[in-house]
Amino acid sequence: MPKSVVAAIAALSLCAVAGCGSASADQKAPSPANPTSSLPSNSSPTPPLPSTSPSKKTSLDSQTLINTVRHLPAKNIILLAPTQVSLKSITHTSAATGHYDVSLIAQSNLTVSFGGQNYTTHAEALNQLQQLLIITPGKGSPCSLDSGIIARAYQKQGFITWAEGNWNIEISGPPGISLSILKPPAQKIAGLLHRVVLPNTSMGVLNWAHGSNGQDSLDLSWLKGATS
Image 1 (cartoon, rainbow, N blue to C red):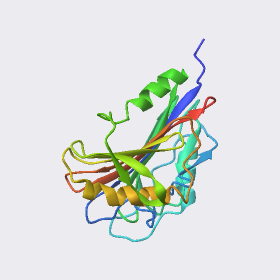
Image 2 (tube, rainbow, N blue to C red):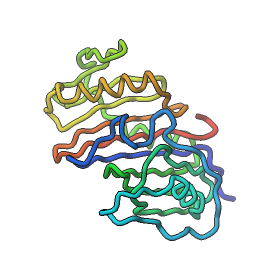
Image 3 (cartoon, rainbow, N blue to C red):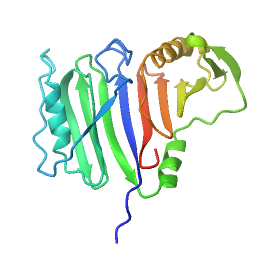
Image 4 (cartoon, rainbow, N blue to C red):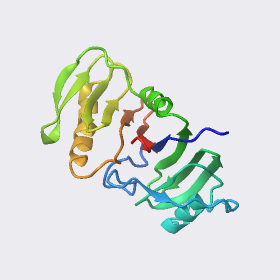
């Protein structure tokens, strides 16, 4: 008899190439207030991936993305899709029992990927999420952000962190990066999270990472299921 699914990890990732935009709140990226919406599954064949020429500025209707996700041949998993995103093209889809992922390009050249993975026990799903946490060496130094938040900063590791309910917020960069580079995005995210609501969960991880290659990325992963 197959094991019943009790928990799943949902994930949403955004990556901005230098000079092409960023995952800031004023762009056509999924809003943390409602980053995803649940869709009924449909086991019919996946339709061909819609796309537009990179030279064209036209955008795909949001219903196109919803229909594409709804028709993924994924079973035993709740399908979620980003909202408030202006599409250039859907570049990749894959699905199987208990798993799916989708990648797309937004009008601002923001690369967005999202998906989900089922686990048979809550402990197994929780362990996978905990592996996303950056290990904090000691207590760090107090770092005052907007909205009265006091985060913890780690200069040597290039890391600022704090908690928002059951969410762990991580602002990171290459080791040794100046905290003066990481603090502005930390303040923006802190301010944003006082105006919007992250998905309700028993554990979530939000990581904004500044890449040494000029790429910034925003990743959200959270536990979704009967125990969340």
